[in-house]
Image (cartoon, rainbow over all chains, first blue to last red; front, side):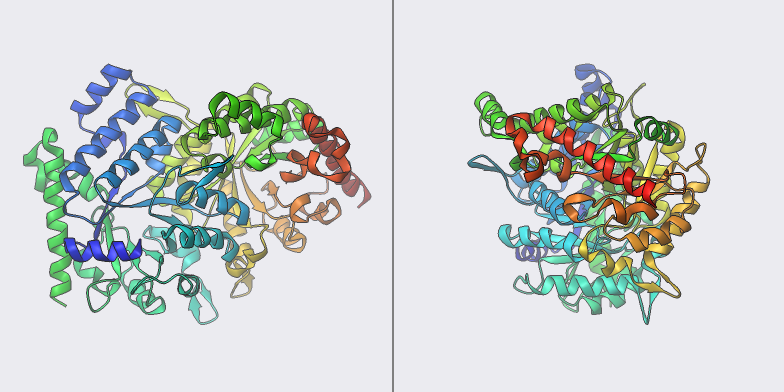
Length: 308
Length: 308
């Protein structure tokens, strides 16, 4: 799957991923009006609204991008109905040949991590049958529990040729509270980065490992350091746009050849129609606004990469 | 909810929690035979099997214990159908007046943690209505992202009078890889423990904070230290039984008055019928085997507390 990701980035010339993180308040009124009319103001009505919203965004941008990153929390808040919408979104993105990075940030002790890995990347056995439940291509994983929390995910990745992005340095303001602490001569995030590099060694694709890392766009200096600590790890970079990251800040996350990183934008793309720059599309044409925002994002990042 | 937990522990004289972590391989054949007959060897058939298995265990032990801790990964591996069984389990435990600790180990940046908090502890808004989706009483949370990942959970706990158990020192063998690292004069787990104590100050119950901690039974020395670092935090202690922890090792997790900690056992209780000590009950009577195992666990822990 890492080879497919690299290949799709080369083909689209877009090292970007669109974060499908729908809040109900993002969904234009003409959609909620319709689904509430059909299902009432219920969890089902909310789930149908976010699914229709996602579908129009996917239809509008799928040919421009290699991958999407649905944030499962935004679905999980609506309970089982929300998770049905998550499942439908993953399946629909696969129909459109998009790579799906499930932003699930799971992580637990061995046997429990194994259950998460099976449910999101692998196949669960039921009697003599096997089923893929959520069936993402990559998932994000939390490293706080150490190697035996990560290993079951790596094992399933080996079997399924799928991949991980492990949290190293997250994009939020207080990420430094623990991640920046000094352990002897290095920061905790560097130590975690070294582990990511080591975990990744045993599962190499053609040029990058199946085991990547998450490093926030809001921390470009740390990105520069971590690029060197994990030379074979693809870096998933959240925090572009709404969280404050800009193309020019992100060049050091990439290798010389412009590969090695993929930049996520969520709100900046999916709520583009609410942004002054794209407001002329109107809420009815929110998909077109998202497409315009994707094109501008690709231009910003490629411009920064060419200009370095 | 922390006051209710303390009250129920006093009433049952059982500072224990039963981990409802059903693997399909734990479920006796007479149940899977029945559900596969009805639903086929499908995700639905698997989910119905774990639900029936849970129900019989709950019916057999609910009067002895204050709380249960369903591990959501074990349900999530069966996708949406599994999560329906999780939801049914939570609801049924509430019918039996059990406190439900959702072992979800979520944790993300601010707005995303807010969505998890809403989905598991709070109420999500849909138009003019509000719904509790999963509706646990406590959840476990991962601290790696720092205060702004925790804060949204604390805010919802304030609104709903619910609580958290934040991962501090986990029970697994490699938990030390990051958690035991020295930061100046202290271990990372101590630093996290100090933050748990601080986060908990603003949300106090009668004698303990609504914000507790997870510290593994397999690390009694660290438990002793952390008991002092977080004097007002209830400690949820996994790792008893199958993972190796014993009553005598656990006395230092408790305060002088025998409160302040709650010990979890999962496999030791729910698969008791497979254990030589309780095998005479037979697979048909697995619920009775679980009840006997709960009674023995209570005796072991109370004996250790009285003997200190």
